[in-house]
Image 1: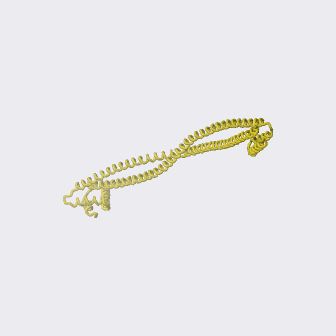
Image 2: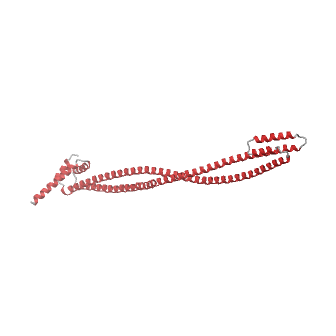
Image 3: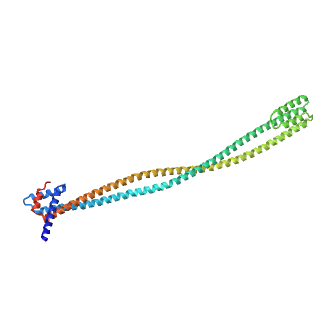
Length: 352
């Protein structure tokens, strides 16, 4: 019974050997092995050890190829991991900077809005000061004109009074007709009265006094009027001087306020411009970081695909080398333990 089992096993193993050898002739690597076997077996002095030696050499080469593949794969994976880390570091840094800039951007916008509002308020404040200054200067100019006009009227009236006094004084002369002098005086006083001046009341009083025969009394009245008007002129000059001093004080205060505001406006404008530049830099930085992230994410995807392709290629080579090594091992097994004339004949008859 045991003998029958052993015979069956031997037949099964032999059948598997023939099948293996037949399959070898179907692809290039197998054809190389078959060709090597056929060349060696065709020589009259051929021996199995030579074939086994060649197979073991092929076995060594295949194992060496597997080790080289393993080293190349390890090197490729290290290179990929290094490149992944480098790209990821750039992505992380750009993402963090972009996030920080995006967080800062609305805050800087609010600061700029507030700064522009302050600037607008200060400009309005300065404009109000300029308006008050203009109004002050206009009012002062009108006051000056009114004062100068009044002074001119006063001077002209005083000159008229002095002329009237000169005419009245002629009444003391014995060489001049009294009637002619009075007519001349009356005509002069009438000319003064016809002028639109605040002194018309005084002129009426002089007209009334001119009929008095007492010349010295009329002259006294005229002198008193001249004295009063000159006193009023002096008081008017003093008042005008006080107004001018007050005007200069108010003008200096407005100009100081305007100067202070001018400095504040310059500072605010500089701050606003700095914020605008900062916003522009943030905007440009956000856009540049977004572009960098697009490039680096695409680079990462490209590298991941390349590395995956390289890994697959190495795995395919490794699978192929393992398959070849398995075939070589089977062939060595055949030639070291199961080789016979039938197998020899079968090998020699295989077509490649």
